[in-house]
Image (cartoon, rainbow, N blue to C red):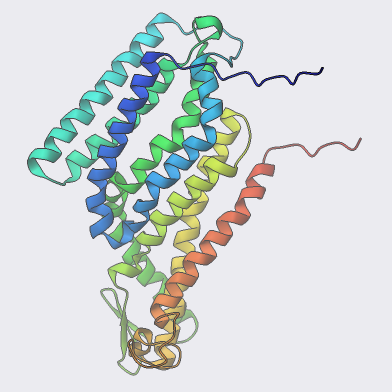
Length: 341
């Protein structure tokens, strides 16, 4: 009579770790509630609705590995964390939790704003990473090594850090570079038109053609929407698909985010250049019609939308495809080709 081996159940997490887990879930829910005001009022940040879903998915995808670190069933040889290291992380984690609490109090008193959102988001990120570092166990309840703690924190970088892109990004990056992007896009597009022997004039962010028709490079054309969305997508693709050890994968993910930002900027310049040429040849009002010249709401109006909307959607799709193509290239970066058997 043969018996089948029963799978070994995963070690249970201790009560402290479970309690910290529920605390982080509550902090994440409050952070999502705070940033909801940005997602629902800023068209450039509608991708924020995906942040809780993508963050949860990445955490679910990594849960078995993370649980192994937290329960002590997986370890890395090395010296145990020094006591002063742990005390320092405890102090930093408490500071992050206090920052979150102050931000939440400010949010309740004053409503939405830059200070509450920054405090809540950064407080949540710091608390999540600190709790992860402190919760890692060694084998048989021994003290975990520093390398094991860092490995567990690495698994939490995207699920926690992505909340900075969906909220504080507006105040840290958007408000600072939107005007510069708008000015630079206008200068580059007008320079391309002049280089192709077209007589134009520039007044502020408006390009005036020889026939006195004009097209304005509006705030929506600054590229901040594609910039923030591409950074988010690049961070997600890097978290899921980029490979390597802790240092190698971290460098590849940073490179992926930089490539995402560069791709968004270049494609936005291309989109605005195409729209400027289309307006020059067909009139500026053609941008608010479909390619057949029909107004929105007319019978037979294209399902692709206006020329302006179609160009924006096509640029975003192309950016996504470019970022997908970067994944295998970055995975090969810095790796030696395997020798033939």
